[in-house]
Structures are given as structure tokens and as C-alpha cells.
Image (tube, rainbow, N blue to C red; front, side, top):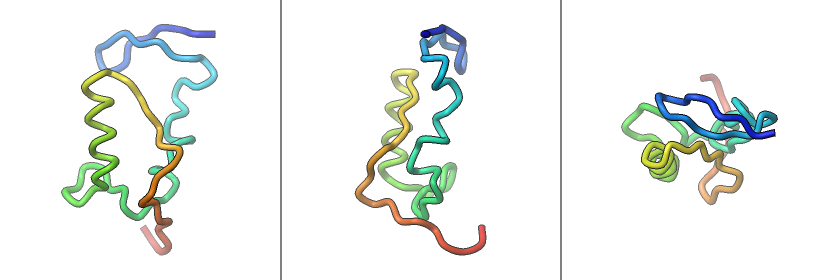
Length: 75
């Protein structure tokens, strides 16, 4: 089922089974050591992806990435 809801002030459509699941499916959030949102040294790919999301009011999880490397250690 597809529903509409307001996301950051814009009406968007989403499959109900995927609403709010972006981080669960995004490779960036799977402990990638390059992913540092809000920091100046954040991943270039993540930054570009985020800019597209902002421009078009979409949400795009990353499923495949050439620079993913798991962070090992304490956060």
C-alpha cells in the first residue's frame, strides 16, 4: 500500500512497509568508517547522495558502495 505523508514540510509518497526503514537498509548506517554525517570529513558519496535527496525531497538508501569499509573499534 502507498500512503502520502509530510516529510520535512513536503508531501511525499511511500510504501507503508518501507516507511521509516531507510537506516535499516542503508549501507552507510551499517557501521561504515567513512560515514560521518555533519562532519567536514564525511564520505563524499554520502554527501552527494544527501544533496540529491534534499534537492528532490526523496530518500535513497545505499545498497552498494565501492568505498564501504566497516568501522572496527569503539565509537
